[in-house]
Image 1 (cartoon, one colour):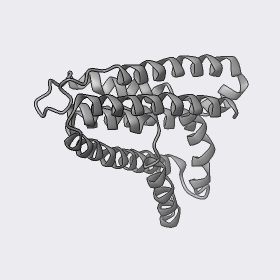
Image 2: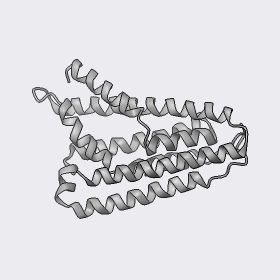
Image 3: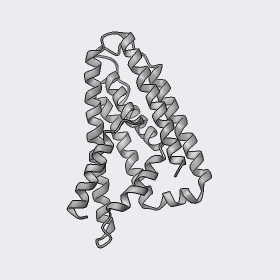
Length: 207
């Protein structure tokens, strides 16, 4: 991959990684509730799922989804169900101890699988990767090494963007000192998560 192409890839996905979406909101809410390090487990789940979507995009799964739209529709329905559940669990999650530093944290693997499930339920990722990534391939060079560079680069950028939001969630947590404020924060984040997830599913269906 030419260095100029790689820089363009970094610029595009660095900005994209900072764009609020369901994954960002999950990490933000996890950081607010449990702290930075636990939230990064959810971020790792998101990044792991993106590797899965990248591999599917490279294997031609996007074209297969276009050939069998019924399967893609089923995936969108399952995806929105998962996003709806995560959004509602955020809205109605406990707030009585959210402003305390020593709040009990769920098992790290649970947070990891939350992030994995959320991003795996977003078929727009497949559409996005399949539509954008071919632009950055240099056909005069071997494709597998370029793909490996892409996976590594995008995973690092994804984790970097989510780490910024995880740190921001910790900052917000320090500023909110009442259960009522925490409840309002949960309501906003959960609602936006559901809306953003629904929009992503609809957009995926339009491709």
